[in-house]
Image (cartoon, rainbow, N blue to C red; front, side):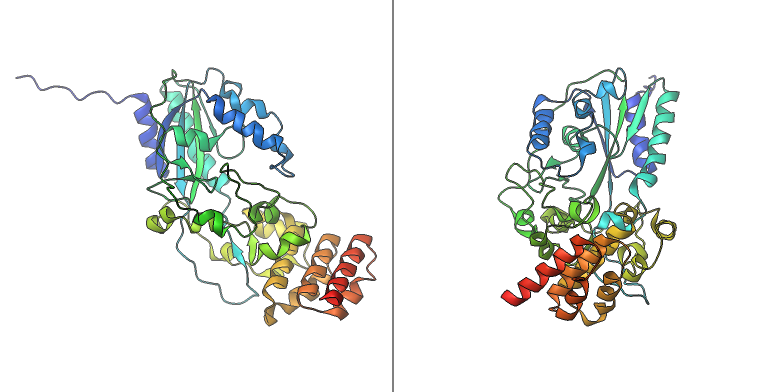
Length: 377
């Protein structure tokens, strides 16, 4: 009897298997034809203004509905996910450390770590006669929609993609290819059920009923993307979040069940628990030397200083008092303005009186507000 030869491995299987070997935790194929409902929903989200100050999301928004504009002849897309479900990391010794950092920012910038993996996939695709292009949160690609159609998970009530295997702590990426289009199979079933823990846990009520995030109220947006002062009414909701917020991911039962399973990305305690004093009395250049490889660079030095003093105001821990003093004397008016809020939380009339004489009118106005609130209390 002649032994049967093993079936040849297809190009899609080869690319998927390589992706998993490189360190992605999940991978699956989806059609490059974006469903009408997906891009219409995105347009409605933009139309409602929930993108806040992220104007770059509107630029070329139409391209998200036409992946062929990013790769001519795009037919199939390899949707990819990598876990950042880190175990808790110890607080480093020394320094003045307080506040929480979202888990995805505990590791050096995920773009820099993921792009080389995508480059490997692009080269492998080329060797197979396939044109490909990789994206990780930096192009007109709706990664969450692709991942859902690739059966990696579902669009949860939190607005995030949730996987029964990985939970909600998933960084998404995509490899566009010119492989022939194949219709998608059934979508991943919705496993949220009656659970609304993510909605209840959101500190500023930023999760809307249509499973979309209103960035205007989202702590992650306010501490990373937002420039200038944060609305005073939202600052208490920031609580102890120094950079980002992922409480909606943390409380998800699927995240709890998955546990700490990140295998490719590694956490850095100095990023998870940065020394708050490092955001003050330093130049932007020196700040970038220290944090240029991390998400912490996104808000820039004055943004991180603003966040630090907001956290100090909300926590009112005695050991954080030096942060208020550093902020009140900071070179950036945005940081001094944030100090007004923090001093009001500490009920520090003397500190507010001093900032009421600040050379910047915006700082003086915030100091006046803080004093009025204390008088009316």
